[in-house]
Image 1 (tube, one colour):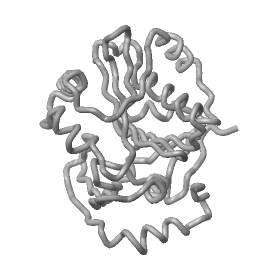
Image 2: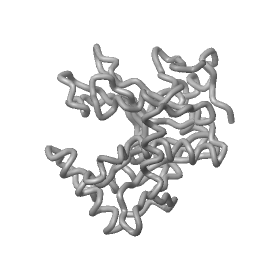
Image 3: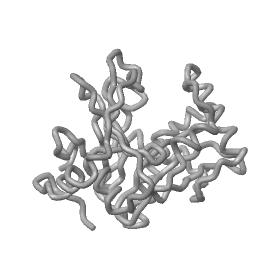
Length: 247
């Protein structure tokens, strides 16, 4: 399967005609802390398949457990989907520095697992980074990570035998979708978010994967803004993927 180019609306019509009937709008407070209401356009599925899931990602949707959603907040367009074509990526000076700094990190691919080691690290991450949060590490795995509609797995980062980070990703032969990344806050000097994306890019290159979906790039939220430093990238605006930084 190839992803649709900007001028191709066939797959978008497939979503509109066949699956839109299952979606509802849910109003909540902004999950990213912006001072305005948010609307999740979402639906629950028991199965989808790689091709259809890829269509959703190509049209800006995200996955949360077995839920597919897009943000459709009134009067707000802050959540801008971002994706990379790993074969085109060129690291900047800081990214090369981060890559060199983390050469002592070993990377392993494993099935999604709610192990005591993983839960301990995620709990530490959540308590340190999001002390106001109400969800436990177990609830993140059970409700957010675990999926029956995607091939979800983990990429684990270790220094010696110590787990310092875990990336939760969905994968297919054509795309990789970054679901979540948690890490040991004591390792912040390593720039773990940047390290993780660099490794996801490397994973895609090794396996010939065309697209890496990074979720939302939100200019007003610092924790979501760093993704824009990976260039070239593409931003989905008004239904079109616009290249940024491509020569």
